[in-house]
Length: 487
Ligand code: ARG
Image 1 (cartoon, rainbow, N blue to C red):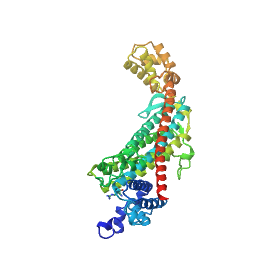
Image 2: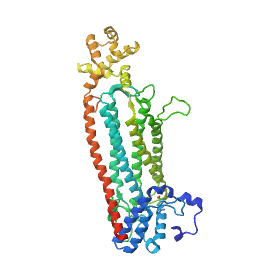
Image 3: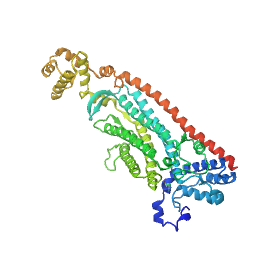
């Protein structure tokens, strides 16, 4: 349709397929229609088109809401296709006025912003769902003791609740990143035109308001040519996915028969085509795999943007192909990991047993010595010597005799009998009761963090539903206005 004005001849099929973004544009068709409706209402309210012209265009657009747009079309993208169909339905005299005072360049930026805005709200809700699951699991597992690992070697005694709370806190940060980005996405570029604005007396504030935006992305060059908000959004999805991927990796390790800390529900496990005994964590592996895919999308976006001059360039069309799948992967990953957490079995006996066979009580013993005025470095040495003796003789620390202790400790800063008593009074329970620093594995800290995070969940719930309602209300008002003009 556009070509006929300036260029001779049709594009051949291959070239059209190469140029066209219709297949990706299906995701934004509804936003393009809503954006066009707000634009047409504004043109009418500002006496740029008549009521009868507005009515014809608006009812054509209304009908298109039910259209299943075919990818096989001579149009280059959804914007051209929708305009073509509106002109077909409303006639050139009315339909031909729809594209007054705007351009595909502000249109596409608008559509992407509306889509990401909705996706962010969905993502925030999914994140809250996953966080809620983690907090309620943490609440039930405050007494589920386990070793905490660094370098995948036993480090300190901890509780499963502490690990779950750590997961929850990383997801809170993801949530907060999306929550803040929403403000930058929720600005309307509509009416910026191709790059430099228009001489027609349009009202950009009014279309922004009709579409539920908080304000304008004001500068028309910036509004049409920038996609940093997309890089920001997909970048945050990449970060979220790396967090989920780490959780997935932990669960994969813990579900091995060697660890057996957890067992995945059959519903969330796969089996082997040949080995009948297998119960595989494929879903979790796919979270890892899809994380790689999302990071690839993020690379694609940044590489696309880095060499572009200011203003719209058609390269930007390729950015869309990264957004929708990134959103879908993040949403589905959150849903499945939430379900995995909800349904997995926790084997607290195995977790506890892993502590017994290790030396993760060592730092707690060293801290007992520190409390008696022994320099930490000396305490570190003493306990290190004890662990070495125990390990060489394949004993646990409490199994060391007074004689064993005497033979291994070279420092003369504490009586051997006192040291023996300290080793014997250092238990998992005492360790977790005495751990008092803020954010530690200590029992009181678990309780405090759980109740604190519950309040945080509520605050986000309120904020997110307020935002969703603002958009819903804006669209309801838009429809009301449209109905008044159409009838
Ligand atoms: N299909 C284009 C995209 O997705 C829309 C904007 C086209 N604008 C242009 N001046 N060719 O980015």
